[in-house]
Image 1 (cartoon, rainbow, N blue to C red):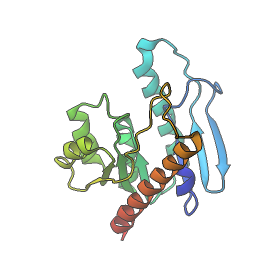
Image 2: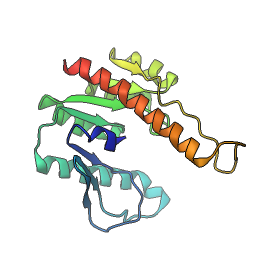
Image 3: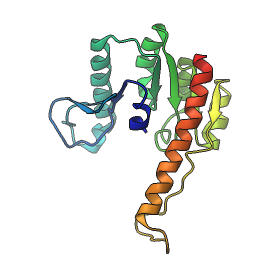
Image 4: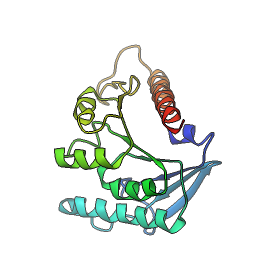
Length: 191
């Protein structure tokens, strides 16, 4: 999705919740023209009970990385309630703040956190009807995406006549649909 966005814009993808394996120190990778990926250092606290602390620590690394660069983006796209602080920072600089709510990232988000997110962002987009209904009560600029509803079979179940290539093609079509919808919403808001 971010590769597609980077075709016409400069994109920095800050990935605080990526895999725990990898470099011990933060890593910045220029994936292709227009797309830079920042991954914080390896998770040094492997205990399951420390998961929340690890996520906050990695998010803090992301915040410091972005603040050091002091750039002025037109759009900041977040998908974690933990990134609300950085969103507020860039909102003061005039950036349009978009929150992408999906079921996977929202599984442990409380009603109070949803209210904070809705108050801190300009737009909320989601492919989930349930999340749409919850967020539209807090932010009038909440949009339900038609794309993003692709249902993949579990890994242990193989559907007859469905190849990996066909599933990959469906996934790419779904991503393109979501990006078209989100792009149209953002263009209207940026005017």
